[in-house]
Amino acid sequence: MEKQSKPKIHKRTFSIGEINHLIVVLMENEREGWYYGNKEQYWKRHQSILEKLGHSLPNNSENN
Image (cartoon, rainbow, N blue to C red):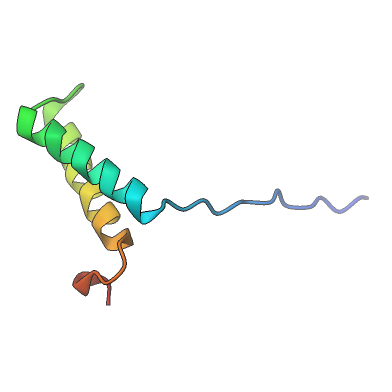
């Protein structure tokens, strides 16, 4: 029986500029009140994404 190898998983990361870009887009979205789908679930997910992006930035005091 042949041993099956695990698929390679490539870690992809965002640059600092890309993270900042996403945060700005999300903040504009929040400022304008734009959302789709279930409002409560959308804003909960929105906040979670913002927190994760913030933790991805270097020198984040909450990250240390």
